[in-house]
Image 1: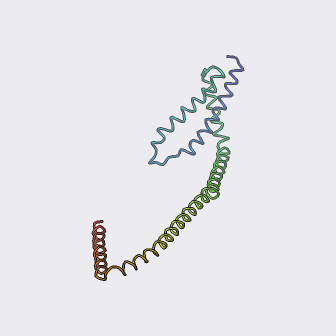
Image 2: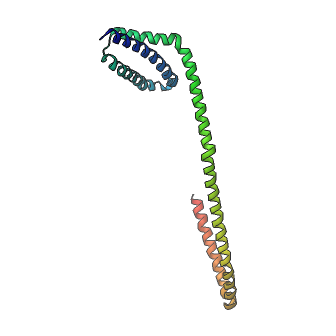
Image 3: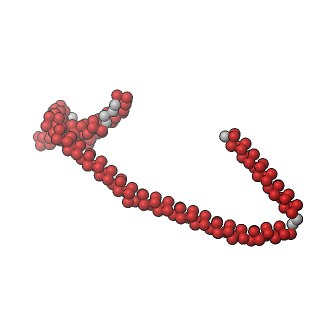
Length: 192
C-alpha cells in the first residue's frame, strides 16, 4: 500500500469518525426510549453498529482492500471527538430545524390533500348517496300513490259487493292478527 493510499484511508477514517458521531446523534435523537421500553435498545443498538461497520468496510474496501490498522481506529476516534467537541451543537440545531420543517411540510401536505382531495370526494359521495336515496324514496311514494288509487277503487267495489257481516269479520281478523304480532314482538324485545 502506497503512502497516498494510506493518507487517503486515514482521511476517510477521520471523515467516518465524524459520520459516526453525526449518525449516532441522529440515532439518539430518534431512539430515546422511556424506562419501560429499554428492551428496544437490545435490538436497535446492535443493528445500528452493524450498519455502521458495514458502511465503514464498504468505503474501506475499494480504498485499501479492507486492511485495518491501529491508526485507522485512532483516526476514527479523532473524527468522532472532533465532531463531539466542535460540530455536535451546530449540527443538532440544523438537524432540529430540518426535522421541524419536514414535519411542518408533511402536516401541511397531509392537510392540503385532505382538504383538497379527500374531503371533496367524501362530500360528493355523500351527496350522491343522499340524492339516490331521495330519488328512490320519491319513486316509491309515486308508485304507492299510483297503486293506492286503484286499490281504493277496488276496495270500494268490494264493499259494495260483499255483505257487511263479511267485512266486519275481516276487520276483526285484522285486529286479532295485529295483536298476535304485537305479542310476538314484545316477547322478542323482552328476551334481549
